[in-house]
Image (tube, rainbow, N blue to C red; front, side):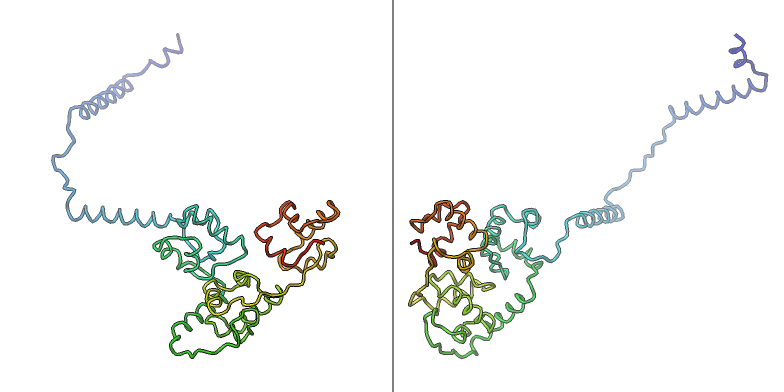
Length: 293
């Protein structure tokens, strides 16, 4: 009882102070409840100052949204991934076409070739092509090719020694616009490696050769006489000699030898198709150099 008495035992001055405080609280509560603080002055939201303020806010929003967008930096289009392609606005089909093209160990070397492979629309190509960054040697070659095409009316036609692609010289290939010293020598060197071109599309296998240039070469040079290729017996050939086949790498060579050991002897060259992981798309080219005896 004494505890409660201590809390309610005040002298006269303390009681007056408490009464005055309670009175102030009641007065403020009555003012808040009964006094209208709202203003009758309506703000015109269509004034030039308000509109200018809203425009400034909208511009700041658009700047912020633009800053939040993923930035595109220069890139080589040959190495576009699924994620990168989606960021650029490419469809899954367009990305897949590029990936399938790259699996053949070929490269796109210009924006027109990129569109031809992926089949992207002109609008998307115009949007992303400014960011394409090809190797320096490709850029220089494209510039030279464009310059040659621009000055084509001033270039005199040079006669060629033959129209047979398997007999043409490096100088003959140089008559094709877009082919210089390096590419002409590269074609001749690859032809020697193949022992001669058997199929026209083998020219596409020449490293770095643009498809447009390949078309120009094949418009002038044809396979008139097919090469006589020296074949080796798949049942007796050594590992080292089998590796000389331009279409057989180390792993495939190993698989062929493992299969040969398993069956003892191949009765027909078509048995190569039974090998697990054998590249069937290269079968016609591989068997140009092999025979089963």
